[in-house]
Length: 203
Image (cartoon, rainbow, N blue to C red; front, side, top):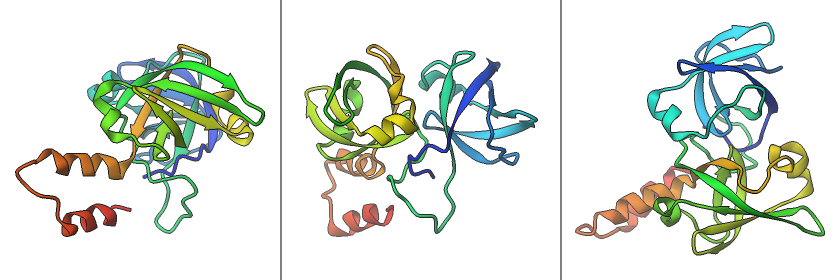
């Protein structure tokens, strides 16, 4: 599990045959879970200047493309008992979305991101969302476009300061919303308070 606070920026050294190698100050142990642009991946090799992670076929198909030389967000998995300043994130990417507009504000910037229709049921006004692994609050929803108000410190500590219109980002919806939507799909069963309690326990 992760909480959407970026530890550092890593740089892509190579990416081939489902192996992604990064240069980074952070040194994991073999088998450690690390979120790279929000995707939970496992460390398989440690180098002097970084480490390599391995992607499954599903992950490679689901994530936005990794490019040599690009900077990426890095967050190690949280430990039981750690303070959670963002929200609980699994590192399971739902979809890739596009930044369709950026508006500079008196404090920070507003980013407008167009979501695929299949994940719209998982988002809510003032709800949580992870964008490239960054824990954020949805300021507004207009049809299939969400507005995110990015404050100056988040611009400084993430790659949002470098993002441009038409850039692609990895999206992970809120954990609670996914489970609630799944239960509600079974229309023959009514959602009981016991079901609600089970969902709440996930947090």
